[in-house]
Image 1 (cartoon, rainbow, N blue to C red):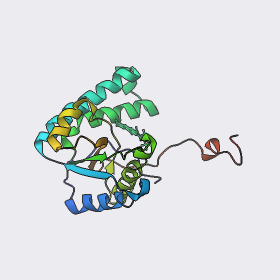
Image 2 (image 1 turned 30 degrees about the horizontal axis):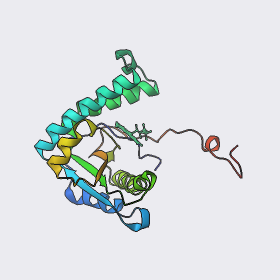
Image 3 (image 1 turned 135 degrees about the horizontal axis):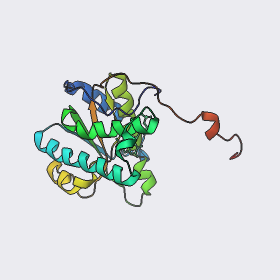
Image 4 (image 1 turned 30 degrees about the vertical axis):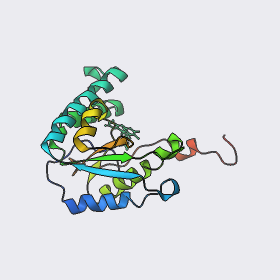
Length: 195
Ligand SMILES: Cc1cc2nc3c(=O)[nH]c(=O)nc-3n(C[C@H](O)[C@H](O)[C@H](O)COP(=O)(O)O)c2cc1C
């Protein structure tokens, strides 16, 4: 958990199917509302999907640039934000080198709150990420499928009553995978009260 950082730079080395499947099996060990396991994971490697995802990743990066007002200066230096910006750009530029993409889908249940729907897929995604880390792989949760969602749904054949939850690029990381950096735990915990 401590070193399962967001990985956005991948070596082009292929990832064996059985390793992908082992990570997906770990995903299926997650909890879900009433244990309905309303998930489906589509492993995407084919050229048609890659063309589409290339477009999606370019759009994703450009939406990020617009949203956060990223300028060329914001890509330079050693600061945290600059490093995150470069990492995002590297993912967008390097989409073609990503060995495997996993599209994570969830089927909302009748009368279920959106929280419960989300909580029935994101723990599985986290399990996947941790298993990937344990296998020496890296990944990052992205929503960079949205600009091509209709085409992607059609290409993959996603039924209408299913939602796309995340697109995970998966591969062996370039460079080391350092520890995560987070706010100190004391600053986010209240004992017997909020503060
Ligand atoms: C809901 C959600 C959406 C995210 N969307 C993206 C995304 O579209 N592209 C991306 O590169 N990273 C995305 N991330 C990854 C976050 O940027 C990352 O988890 C965060 O920066 C912490 O990174 P670290 O674990 O390496 O410290 C997303 C994470 C979450 C939880």
